[in-house]
Image (cartoon, rainbow, N blue to C red; front, top):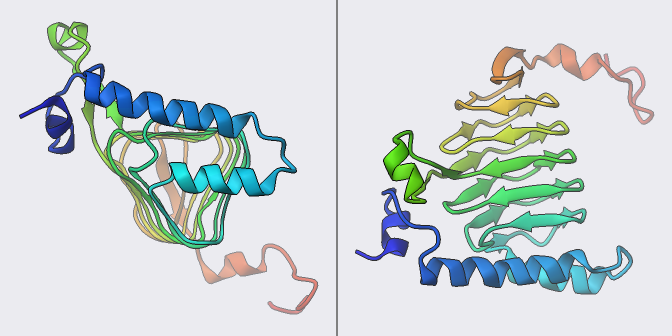
Length: 200
């Protein structure tokens, strides 16, 4: 079993293996080219993002700068939006559902390292996938760690470090991130809508 196969099957692997390093360098060059684009150069930005990202719906938007490790391990559902400085370390799959909103300076990292110092000093790592459901909003400066699943209709508060999976329909925040409360129908009344100011 080569290092790439080990990484795909959830074993410790060498991320500096020549095949893996080649894939990462290719993506790094594309991300560099992407991040040199003028914000007004929408066509070039779109072309490069569609080259980098593995699977996406037509209506996604990423505000530059953006960085990822491989790109082809990323799946984005419909109506995906990220503010500036999104980092996705996609050594394993990172899957986003539809209607995901990501604030600035967020990190999704699938890569982690052994607790054992001998293994760690060899440069080995392991990759665990991240899954995000539909209608999820991440505040600014959120970090999502390897192996986490986030349910549907979830809000992750700014500055959170998400170390464990989060269920559907909740507001969660903190370091480590924890569930604070359920999202309820009463939350629709928190702000009035110009189109329907008497909604509540």
